[in-house]
Structure formats: structure tokens, C-alpha cells
Image (cartoon, rainbow, N blue to C red; front, side):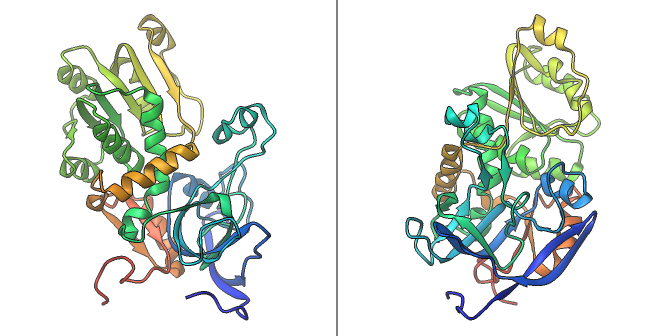
Length: 354
């Protein structure tokens, strides 16, 4: 149902400073011309949100409503956007339109890239106001918990696209967190000959194995395991979704001569890498920053087609008033791969009411 026009306030989880989130009543967002008001259903929590919570993100300034992994229902539609009642996911990128990348159409690597939920209020609230062009409809027939994976899935789609994977390649993924698992699923769907995952967490290795992936055994040396799996050559494509210094140190040993390394995770500071080894093997090193509009649309198509079996990914949902507890859960790196926050009802989640 559409929000009543006389309603002027809403509930929100507001980041007010390092490690502090307050559940507050705040004014309903203003809806400028060309924007829409979206009723938040689910908001995914990711590593970028952790850095905001801890006060280490370079741009986020308190107070702010976080949340850039947005799934919701259009409540007040923009003239040129999806109609009221449409379920949408959001491309949350804000670009300047003036820098060289923007002028070339590469707005996802804008020199001054910003995001809703970081630089402008996001969706850890009952409602969020967004420009119509950021909204991408997704079928209401799709389970909500799968639709809510669209934004991180777009990262994985972009990573696999950047890797040059054509089919038949031997792939290694470091890290079985949400992005690592989604990258592995997309790589397999796109025709990878084999996918081996290296992950130190026993819980997350088990998740990867339940999804049908080979993993590096507990206590085994990942490089020895990769070389054994590839006949001593190394992987054709290595995805680094861990972004850990210990992984950076072994990437040149994990990839074959003339192979490709894709940096999917974001390193928080410079790390040591053997550039001589990369040079002598003529390896290609590819960076990944978020996604293009086409990647988000591709992610939506994959979800609507049910091609990846996303319903098997273990997730957990917290109510808006328990947002801080949701962050605590998300940071445990356990068997629950994705944590969502939102006012979505049990019926909307496809579950029986308690």
C-alpha cells in the first residue's frame, strides 16, 4: 500500500559515530523532481558498511543512514521511472558526468564516484528516495531473498566479465565470502572448466562444498593444492576475493604463465606483491571496481532465470531495530554468507508467519 500523504516521519537506523547505530524516528525523505520514493524491503550488509561502522571509511560522515544493497517497492513513482508497486533493485552509484571516465561512458570508475548509503542517505530505513534512473525492476515472482542479492551479484558478474573467461578455464577463487561464492557461481555458469576455492574458515568451506565446489582442504597449502589440481601449471584465472596480504603474496604462484589475476576484493592498504614473477610469466592483472549498468541488468536476468541456485546460499534477516546486531552477525565470517536488514514480512520472504 502507498504511504499516506500525511505521514511525515519514518524509522531509520542511523550511523552516528564509530561503532554506534541509533534506531530513530527521522523525517520522511524529500522526493525531488525525477526521483521516486521506495519502500525498503531488504538491505544487504557488506564489507564497505563495516568500514563505515568503525569510522574508517574515507568519505562517510556521521550521521548517515547506511545501505547501498537496496531492494524495495516503488511507493511514489517518478514520471519516467517504474510504476508504483514495482519491486526494484538499485544501482547505487553516483557519478559526476564530467571526468574523463564519465565522458567515455565508464561512469562506474568516475574519478569522484559516490554511492547512496555512503555519501547520501541509503535504505536502512523504512523509505529511501532515489533518482528514477537508479531503479531496475525485478520480477515479483523471484523470492525476495534472492532478489536482494542483485547488487553483490553484479560485482561478481563484472569480475567474471573482466576476467576474459570464455569457457573451459581452470579457475581458482580465494575467499568464500559472499562475493567469492557469487563469483564462483557466475564463473561456473559461464563455462569454467573447474572451480577450486581456497578459504580458511571451516564453516565457509562447507558452504562452498554444499554448493558443489572443490575446496582446498583444511590445513593444506593452497599453492600445493592448486598446482596439484592443475597438473603443476597453476590456474588459468585466479579471482582474489579475500583481499588479504597473505593472499596477495601467493597470487603469482597460483596463476599459470600468461594467466590472469582478477582483484575482486578491495585491499585497505598497499601490500607486497612479487612483480618480478608477474613480469616473467607475462601475467595479466585486472582490477575490479563495483559494476556497470549492464552488469546489474545481467545480474537481474540471472536471478529471474534461476540460473545460479541462489536459494541455496545461507542468509539471515534482522529487523531494522536490530541493525547493530545484524552487523555483528555479518562480521563473524561464519556459515551465514549474507545478512539482510529490513521490515520485510515473513510472507514477503516466502516463509510461514510465526
